[in-house]
Image (cartoon, rainbow, N blue to C red; front, side, top):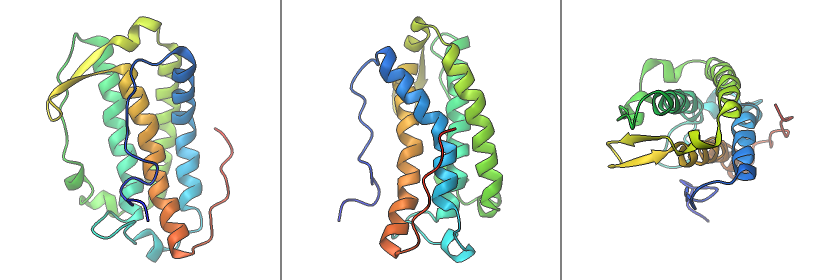
Length: 183
């Protein structure tokens, strides 16, 4: 069995994106909320509270993690577009996943992710070619990220966590979710 932590492989940035690859990443970000919603469709409460791997987060925590992370990503884009090389504030995602709202109904986070991605995609589609070279500094990683790399990272990130859920469904023999219609 492949590593359940990385069902679609680890993120690897191969350098600056050309306009076609940028459009593809933006389309993947646009599609992520519907794909996540489809991945959890029909799951019972006990299934939502099943870890996707030993020592891993539950399906519910994964669903709540995506808008937490992508809200931070959206904010990082805004900072990089409005300040010269800002240093972002990292957050402890494992501790966020243990907060009381991470045990709430998944529809709250599915709806939040959908609204966030609609607005984020609107922003991304307006960026000029030179905007993608804007950077933010991530002190936890000890390096700068261009918006080009961050775009590819967040496109991968939504698919990565959705695959945690769909891979768990396959392993457990739970009914496969229906394919989501593009947003």
